[in-house]
Amino acid sequence: MRSTTVREGSRLRLSTEYRGSPTPRTKWYRNNELLPLCDDFPQSYNGRRASLEIPSATAADAGTYTCVLVNDAGKSECSCEVVVEHHHQTDNQPPHFLRRLQDFTVLDGDEVRLSVKLSGSQPMKVVWVRNDQEIPDSPDFRYEEEDSGSYSLVIRDAFPEDAGVYICEAYNAVGDAHCYCKLSVHDPRVAQSRAPRLVGCLTPLEVEEGSAARFSVAVHGSPRPTLTWYCDGRKLTHTPRIKVEMDDDVGPDEPVNHTLGILHALSTDSGVISVVASNCLGSDTTSTTLKVHPYAPTRPEKTWSSVNSSSSLNPLPGRSSPAATPFRTSNSPAPRIRPSLKEASSRFHICTLDLPRQVHDTFTVTWTEPSE
Image (cartoon, rainbow, N blue to C red; front, side, top):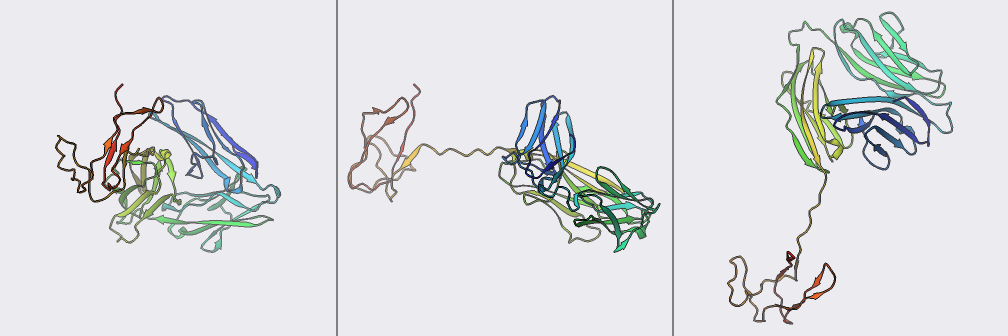
């Protein structure tokens, strides 16, 4: 898909052609967040082309869009960038981060690339800061800029003293913006260093649409590994519906518990759930499946009851009453059903039940349709 720029309030349409057998399932993501099937994000698939439309784009619709195709043979995906220009001030946009910095843990001597993607009016100046000190452009800390709006800081050879908080600050004539990350530089010669190791395995789960789904896993490793959750290969991030949590209150040698919780599961959440634990020494992964069944409300039985009371009707003459059926305590005669049935339509009949005037018993009428 080609990256595109639209004006605020205009229609945004993204599409891609695909092939696959069996016919793949298609999902759309914006900034790694699954887009639901609703009127706000109309989606269409005809077996050859997948399309996504946004009837009226706003600034919140800017970002990275990804179309993911999955079937039993594998998966494929493609992405593009969408920029939404202000309707009245197209040429006067402050800096806005389309891709922000993320925390890094690297080994001593590794090359490090910190990268962001920005939109906004030009000219734009980008400055990199470490521990509140501006980093000058040099061979060891090289500034890079691309026409697509990507800006990077490349650290040629990371040392332990290069660790710290890195800030990217962007300026233009309209405004400014910034984001930051934490860089950790680890010495592999330290005795306590070890690659991540996941404890146990994830269990397959089947839930009904609208119910909650929860997955939990524990991990060993030093330095402390970072965990990333995926659904059909697409990264899951913390949202009001999806909770990605970890237990920080553990000792340095104890496993850390991580949890993925989906508060209200949707049918589009079905797929392969996987988790990857990684640090600068390696990674470990495990996966399972989540199947979300469509919600199916149960139908009530065809049973009607009168106002209840403490007594029940007597058994018919000549027949014994079941043990679970209580006897009537009233002296009134038992209810009778008139033997005649009046045909009301081709589907329904009217049945009349005669009751004595002072009967206050509880009884049940059940209608069974004949086979013919």
